[in-house]
Each structure stands twice: as C-alpha cells, then as structure tokens.
Length: 117
Image 1: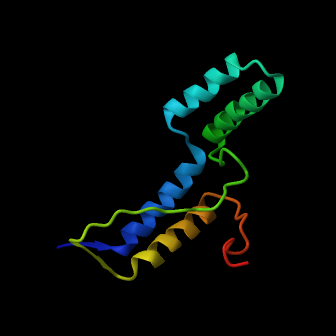
Image 2: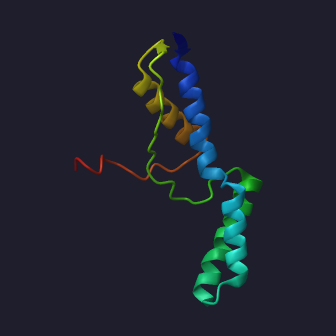
C-alpha cells in the first residue's frame, strides 16, 4: 500500500489551480492565434485578438488569462492501493483550491453552491 500525505495533495491542487488559470496548452493557444488571423467576422477577430492579448498579459504578469476564473471542479483518480495520511483527501483538495485562489489572486466569483441556492 502506498501512503501519501494529504499535504502533497493540497500543494499539487494549489499549483494546478493557478496554472489552469494562467496557461493554455500550446496547441490551443496556437489555434486561437491562427483563428484570429483567418476569422472573417470583425467581431470574431476582435474577440480572438483580445484572447491573444490576454494570453500575452497572463504570461508577462502572472495574472489569470481571464478575470472570471469560474468554478473549480476537480477530478481525481485514486487507486485502491493508496492510503492518505494526515487528513481527509476531500479536505486536502478543497484547501488546495482555496490556497490556489488566494495565492494566484484568482477572483472568487461563486458566492453560493449553484445547486443548493
């Protein structure tokens, strides 16, 4: 059985939360920039151009690509031979999201559970 301290989970989720809001996969960024050059609609070109500028700004400043960072949804595959130590896995994930939003200066735009309003 493999033991993993939940502190490692918290650190990983924090890092990924920040990274997901600051960096797009290279192929997606390339497609956005390519589409900005080939888009026929002036409004479409403007939107795609703004996305490109936001990508550049995020890279230069470390700020999120978009000010609306959405709602964190975390999927995790955990094997049967894994045992977490030092706390509960779900608590570690939630703490990682909390720290990621705080440390990454991400805007918390959800004030209540959207399914239980």
